Image 1 (tube, rainbow, N blue to C red):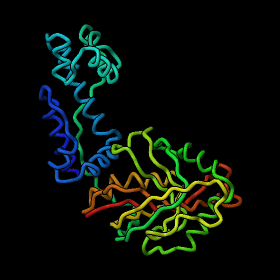
Image 2 (cartoon, rainbow, N blue to C red; image 1 turned 180 degrees about the horizontal axis):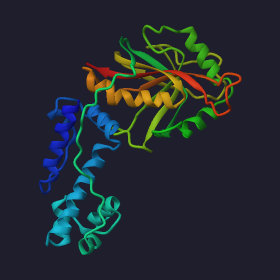
Image 3 (tube, helix red, strand yellow; image 1 turned 135 degrees about the horizontal axis):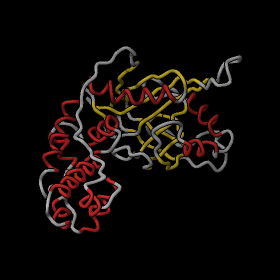
Length: 311
């Protein structure tokens, strides 16, 4: 994957140097023999920004160089970098550099340069990853859901608010339903946190569908016995396929988020698998601080991250 990402960055450099060229992400994925879904996910996970944002920053860095070093009028610079008017170019330029193009031309700055990215593989392994790869038949996810913003660091307050708003007894009814149809050999067990409909670049603040669900056999009834009156449930059909399951244990949510990050930085670059489209699943068992521990000690948790993959 490191070689593929390096090839993508090199291709982007060629394109941003060509007047009027556009960056076609699906075409880039085909050039490096992977899928658009996997390329976007790995790029954003490793760099902290979507491909589209990196391309915009590189274009605006080159535009700033043109303004400072060249004599072309502002419209010519704008058109060279893919904009049809000085107004639209000026807005995009200011969003990146925090200054107007005319100010940069006159004063030589300030600019916020985005240097070309370079990827290097760092050999890790001091902390083993507990991973298993499973081929599962199709199954169904049943439970209440909501659209929430994506939050990268810390607990997601929007998901927490959604869960607090569920009527008392909702999670207990789901847990009982999960226990009655448990089959860990063919699907996740217990109450499952489902993230679906994610932005391809996983940009902070974009919306996803969060579902508080149980995994049951494909075709199972969507009726959950004992569910409080008024709780609407959604049904998500999950196709048969391969899953990578990453186990995590430790301070919550820090250990879980560290494991999630390591899937991109350590596991996928070294394995013959790529992500495929589908919901991302999480099972969590939170353990409160033991009696007698310091008040500053937070909860710990055992968790499993289920990611849909393909060889």
